[in-house]
Length: 424
Image (cartoon, rainbow, N blue to C red; front, side, top):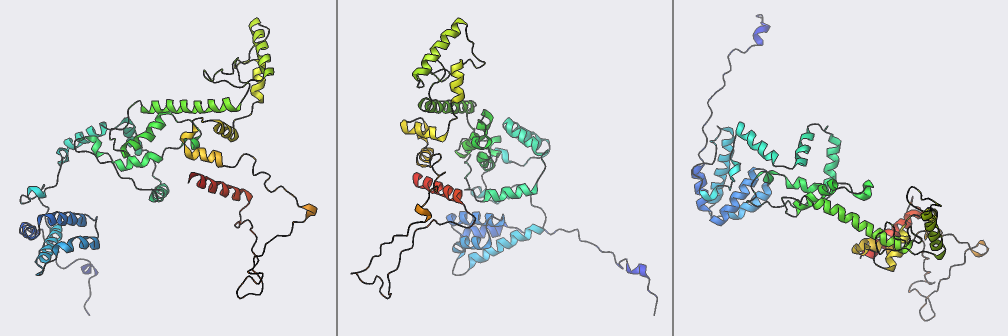
């Protein structure tokens, strides 16, 4: 047996040559023209749009077939044959040489897609200048956010959680940008901006009064959703902040004036606006006048808050504002909360403070519950059931609960149901 050289096995006996010849592209003009001539002009628009969406992955095969089958149906099958030739030629050109830039010269003017002046392909310094100009047209907040993206650490778990969070929200339609508003604003993704309208924390969650920056960040996505591509006016957030603060102060003033007494000041309106007076008792009013006269003579001094001793004592004995005070003020007259029907119904029809604390605090006579009294209804004094010997005793109504639930859970469920009935 001849010896085998191991080195000879590791190298090929013949050099492998790869062909450098790239086949020419298939001419689509005759196939395109023949298929367009066989289809009417109205159906051609539907066919062209459906084919474009299918080739770009927006339609699957079933959806694509349901659109073009009525268009390609013919007794001889000529349209279907031309369609197959065109699709096969398009797929065949994928593996061939690259086409020339721009549209083919044989495409008619009606088939050309509508493009704006700024959509021409550019490269090099021109592309950088155009990109820089579009970035400079963005608001300063967006430019700062784009710069901070490179410094943020990517967390895949957070991205996955956000994906599931966004899945059950109602999808919102992005505002249509008119063609006349050409510029950098057209390149903004309005859908992403609109989704930010609920990302800002609520004041009840943060426990802080919203400032102008927080209000502006919440107003801007709503402007985009309503079609205002230029956003809101510069002073809109400041106006909203002042209006909110004024509204809250007016509501609190009305509630305090109806539920509190012996306020500071001679007329009970110190620091609460003109025309808002608190009820003063005769004893408090007489002592207040005496101390004011003594303060003018220099016999007594006011504290750091500018209050007299009787005013400080009344303020220390005055309890905090609660939901019961809001309810009393709302039952007396409108205090500004009636503009929100849901809040009004929740206050008026909810449980009062302490109403459920002693709900089951009772005892039976002699420590034994009474026997249930059930009235049996019979027909003509005879048996109540058709096939039975005795009447069917009605089940007593008992409180229905679930495993692991306690009385506070049942009370919370009752409050939720009452709120739903009040709103409805």
